[in-house]
Image (cartoon, rainbow, N blue to C red; front, side, top):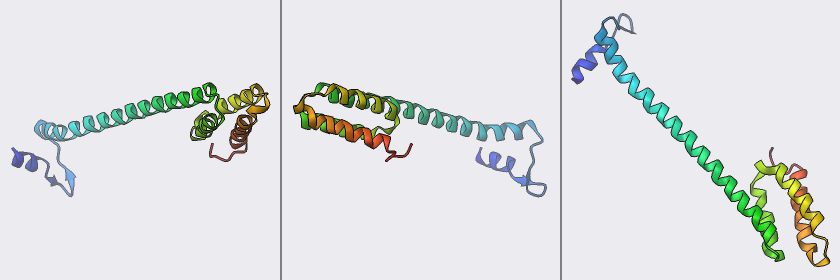
Length: 131
């Protein structure tokens, strides 16, 4: 079988493939078609993995955002706010959230968190990251 395939695909006529019979074309298709299907499948797999990764990243962002809202303790809230810097793709949402957070924290004991909101806001507004 191997000798048949090799003999059918030998280069002839000055380095060009000689595909003149149906058997030659079928042999060529038997080699190329599986490679095409394999590469298409690999491409689809990569696209699916990227989609899953984007969804997981969004869910992680939302969890961190919830932590900044629910946590009343200043150190934990500040840590969650700092963690938001890892999500530059949600820059516009984070800027609006920081503006809202700064306006909501009015008591003197909330000054630490208000400062953290301000630092995060400045981080995203001053283009300290690649857009």
